[in-house]
Image (cartoon, rainbow, N blue to C red):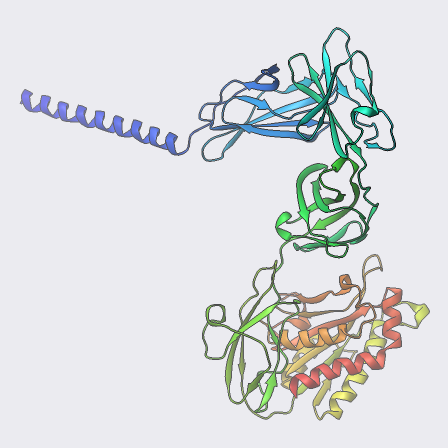
Length: 573
């Protein structure tokens, strides 16, 4: 019995040891996969072997360290190292600069940890005054002024043309004069460097001799604070004569992000969308440069607001699919400019099997059309399906002009109330539709939306069309817009046709910011709600509380009415 008991204890002990070893292995394996970074501090910043060096205590599991130097809250320098002793190559500051030093340790998974202590460094080495003139003309001597000169310290000035040293001398005071004869016969960039007794370059300054002067640059487009979806940014400018390189320098919140060389095409440059983050404000500094002479480059800047990446608008069709005459040719369209449209008519997926749309489709029989569109710098559109049925039917249209008799417009141009003016437009639409042998019903302004929706359903309207004008909080907004329930609504195509045709006669169409387009109400608007009306849309022809829009409406009631009617007629023809 005792022997059996001892055997059981032995087995249990072995199992416990195995479990402990497995646990330790698991902990070790997890630490290997996801190594945790240890805390660390910046110890010092000192000169060593001709360089400034940042030294930190090691961070456990760190595989790299990044140093970021800031002055007045702005990044001025960064470099990386695979050890906790980071050499600052080519770093220069100005005498008495107070520099904040940040170090970021990273593990193999790019997880980051920042130094736990705050560390500042005061740059006390002598430096050249940077505000001096870089351009040399005639036979003028080269002059430099040394900030923070200390006669107790040894400094030397050297001149270089490319990699060739052409002059050196000990510095004996704040003012340095180098005779013109030293550089006579040279052209281009001459670099002066200031070295301390350890041969470390503490400052540098470039002079330019007999150099083509770049003409002043001025950005003409876009305007400042231009807002755009996530997209390429095109910049038009004047000037830049003699420049053979152009750069776009990107800043955000005052921090330099990137320098991109761009091609100048007849004083127009394009910055690719990939250079920008969504929903970020940028300052773009256009820089026109001869060779690499950046100090004498010409610059201008513009601020832009980069929005989200948007989707390509869905495909809509030029003719009604629920009943269509045999042999009708149907156009496929999308509001997105320069989009490619793909389609199938065999029921297959157009995303994988789509044919590139190049010409109108002829409908000879019942057809299931599936479509989608794609365009540069946008997400692909939704897939849209249209079931075309070949049959004869007289279209039934229900017109629902506004009944808002207390919604006043710009009186000085004759706009009285939304109800009065929209009913005048509806008169024209009704007349044109009836002349085209369509069946037309119309709301009574003294009743309400529930009555109109019920009537529209009762008469079997193929299209319920509400006609309104718009207003804004500050009375400054402009442009037409049209409402449908969602991207898949039966009314999406007819609404798209109506909107684009109206936009073509709108007097503000040269300014695309007024292109308010299609709005999806998603159940929030009674007369554009698929739950109540199978094919319905509400248009806001323009803003009656804005001088230009209200004037356009009043001067074009007949034209607007005919335009709206023409879109409906062509859709059902």
